[in-house]
Image (cartoon, rainbow, N blue to C red; front, side):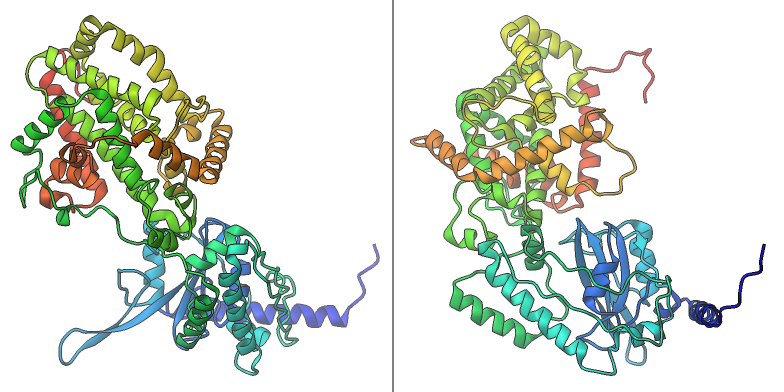
Length: 564
């Protein structure tokens, strides 16, 4: 074959690429404590360019802050939305003579930015407790920093100032027009510097147009405060919002459950876990009411926590919607989702304690089991509180309860119809709810929220899949049905409120029983006044061991059975 002809242009291009590659290698050989020695550091690239680079959940990069020279910003993608977190720099005085600099995004402080990145990537810990974003996939630069600075001309002209101001105006219009479900958009075209061409080394410099008209992006823009927002801009926004009557939704960061501040008529100022006198009083209150009354008290407590009833005008303004059933589907409803998950699990543990706390005869335990199943039937058929129903069924399905053979046998003998209803009606219905295939009851006041809560709050990276949609052949179909169901109950939130109001109309509430069914009371009862403030996972793990010990004490394992 004939030799290829020499191309002067191609030779110059190849030399240029090789020179850039060597320059980048030299940068990456610098001290590991310097951000510029890491490929995830992109220098002074514009905010929108950074958003264009992070494409998938977990993608991240570090860039310079435009509004605070010398500071850094962590840009990442989480839940299909670009997030920006300013890395705060703080001088910590060790004593009168010595001090050190700390870098932090949330609570933990680090000596340098690379240490901060290693911590959050290595531990898969959310960089923000509010947003819950986890970073694990660095987006590396393919050009030396000099070229990136030349490419976007951040220091040589005023184009970036116009870009930032244009973005601020876009964000302001977005906030003001969110009620109408749309926002104007600005498309920024960046300057292509001829000194450092891409030559296939980086992604295209042509920025994608951000679809800011979508509901998802609108809510995300409200949730995340830009680090470029300055005080004067915020004042202008507040003035415009006041003139338009718009109220910015509030991102809640604190739980509504405050057991340490809970004013109780039944609990002493300080109490130990599972204090006998309190357990006895709670048991007496439950026994003094029939299953119809208990179910309605549960409905009242659930409607308050889920914000289906008792939602004031001020609360609606802070939420940005009129019901908690809408809020749980939105990004800024994360704290409500966490609170509802806490209530659901705490309620299930409380039911298990109600059964395992019967240390007398097996007939007494069977009677308690009968009462709980009757309450579950009432919640399903008459009251329509499927949130509480699934909590009760979760408790009955716990291994510590289901293994009590003597108790279940006594239930079948003494309360035959209840046992049949549990096996033939309640268990299949509970399974169908988990698979989002259950036919709706005649009246539903509180839908089965837990699948949606779990879907939205379950970490992306988990050691093993434990949910039904993660280990079932029909997993994707199940997940899609749950999401469609969530859209349905968010759209029809007012009908759930109307049904709950109608069902509770004229109902005489026992304040003491209602207190027993509140989450603050249950947290104090189960873990004590001090233990209620302990880390959630630690509380759950320790109480699981307590339930196992109580269960084995009531019905010991056969001597031939090996403990696992």
